[in-house]
Length: 253
Image (cartoon, rainbow, N blue to C red; front, top):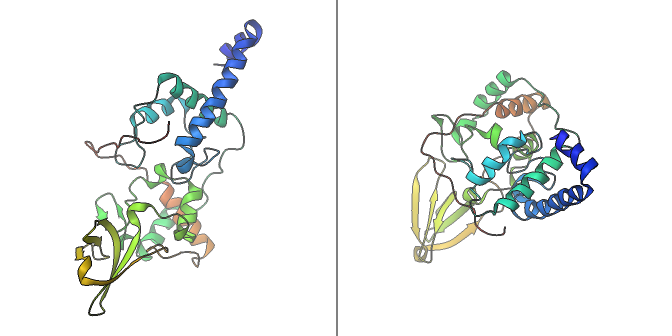
């Protein structure tokens, strides 16, 4: 790549302008399609850090998505637009400071995870609950910065599929859980005991959509415990099961 760039500099200055234009167009494509999850600088958010990812992998991931995750397949991208997007991500990778390694002791972090009751809501591999997000490969799917924020300020970014709801029955009973589905006549939720509950709206006195995450904050954890827990979560990069589907991307290109 460096050899090609040097050739372009010495032989065809116009090629550099074209490359610069590709980067600018790639930037627009990135901001329209990728920045919401990966951040404006590509260093992660809901999605992982792209700056530290080998650029050769990016094109395949964008085209095909990642099975078992929220990363969709952008199969409708024109080849030229895909090349421009990859060029911009490569531009991001070439500048700035890479993310610092995650501090902490992962083995100690696993002990923090177990004694804090995290398995009561989350699953790793075949162990735990499905009430909250599956953490089997959370270290590969989320940046350390995003994970830390999720632990300390879980309400800062609540995935739509884990939004909470509380229904109140006409006799005053209250049931809270993750909203699974809702239509004109019913609301369905999954409670903390992993029970699926469906309620007829005409039989309820109220429905409250929770702005606060159902996950508690771990801001009160000692700093060392928080660092260790984060280090453990960052190691979770389990393989996706064969046959897991990939959602096709929709919206702006």
